Amino acid sequence: MKVHALGMQSLVRCATYFLLFMRREHPDMVNLKIKKLALATWVAPLIVSGTMAGLAAPAQAQQTPVAASVRGLPDFTDLVEQVGPAVVNIRTMERVRAGSDGAGGPMDEEMQEFFRRFFGIPMPNAPRQPQRPNRPQPEQEQPRGVGSGFILSGDGFVMTNAHVVDGADEVIVTLPDKREFKAKIVGVDKRTDVAVVKIEATGLPFVKIGDINRLRVGEWVVAIGSPFGLENSVTAGIVSAKQRDTGDYLPLIQTDVAVNPGNSGGPLLNMRGEVVGINSQIYSRSGGYMGISFAIPIDEAMRVSEQLRVSGRVTRGRIGVQIDQVTKDVAESIGLGKPQGALVRSVEAGSPAEKAGVEAGDIITRFEGKPIEKASDLPRQVGNVKPGSRSTITVFRRGASRDLSITVAELEPEKTARRTPERAETPKSTASVQALGLTVTALTDAQRKELKVKRGVRVESAADSAARAGLREGDVILSVGNTEIDSVKEFEAAAAKTDRTKPVTVLVLRGDLVQYVIVRPNR
Image (cartoon, rainbow, N blue to C red; front, side):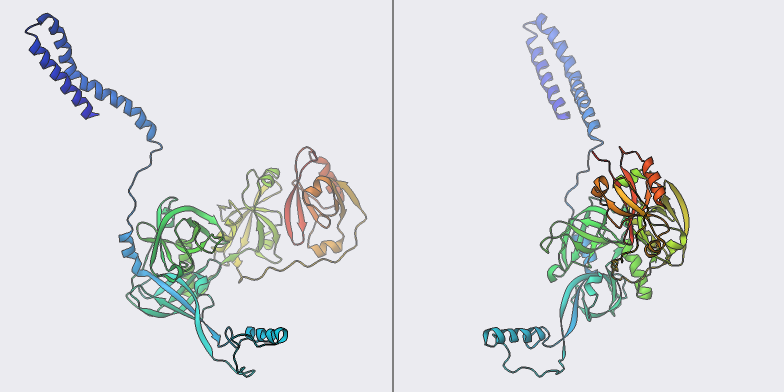
């Protein structure tokens, strides 16, 4: 803008000098033009610059709210030099009996028998002298896997993934300066996929732990590890998302940093060289990197590692409920408003939840005053509470919220979920009624005892909208809308009060679990 104005000013001045030179021959005609040009000589730059500023100001004002700071591409060299010496390669070994996977093993013996029986010839490359039966075989060590890790302290504590070292007979840690150490497994926590190992060394370089709350979506991050065994490989990308629900106890960090097998356990670093996560998982259909990788938030990992270093195990709280998500339709139909909280599908007998008065069908909306936005929030919040602590739990039940006092118990080791046994046929009650497309009967005392319920009616058949909603014979109706059902008469009365033009919410017990089913009117 300034250069343009000055150029115009010089042009006008030249024209003025030319007119002064011509004044001698045509004084009358030129006088007026000289005055105009003289004025233009000093005013024109102001007009031009003012006009340009006036035009530029609105454009600048419009761009200010949406303008993003433009920066050059980041340089990771200093960061890698700073943190690289604290990132290690981890190899694991396992002991196997000689011949268990090679010649003379069980699989080879079966194949030899197959060839002899069906082809009448020995198996190609089979050993000429069969080994003696029951002869003890010596154990041999063979590679089991490769991963990464990073040094937490100068005295040799190293953090990695649980799946890298769990079940290994020997763990070998290699430093960037090529020194190797046999490591001792301090502790492993499979639920969070965090492990801590210890090497006997001092004065080691170690990482700096970052603040996960400062991590922002879109910022640059760096991974250092050993993909496919290639030690100290550096890859970079950005944070794609935070709080990704891919596990019961961990909201993971999603990035587009290239992570492959062997990167597991390595650090995810911010641009300040601080560890913000542990590279743990990838989303892949091929087994290799496809643009989506996940890291364990370092704050969660540090809480786990501290317990592992102190006691070798992690203790978590539990209250004894099986939960599910609350859908939008269910939330609106029962008066909850928006889909939030954790739907209690079953309450374990004798558990803290049962003692506190939690019932199947309740929706847990707060724990220790903190909101439960989604079902996965509950086990995380309860898990962080020390067993034996007394807490307050808020449940939404039949249109109203209530606070219950609960004593948190210790979470037991993971165990396989039991399968619900098939129930034997029990005598059916003769009293029945047909409503909402359902034919129901009262529960006998024997059925109530078997099902461990205090109320409800049994579905004998489902038709029309009830059948389309998924209800079926053997289901137990516990409530219709927000009305508890204790008898066939109560079911009939509750069904009669419903608006047949609107969806009806039915709380159903099936097997050991409860769920909300929305029965929509016929169209």
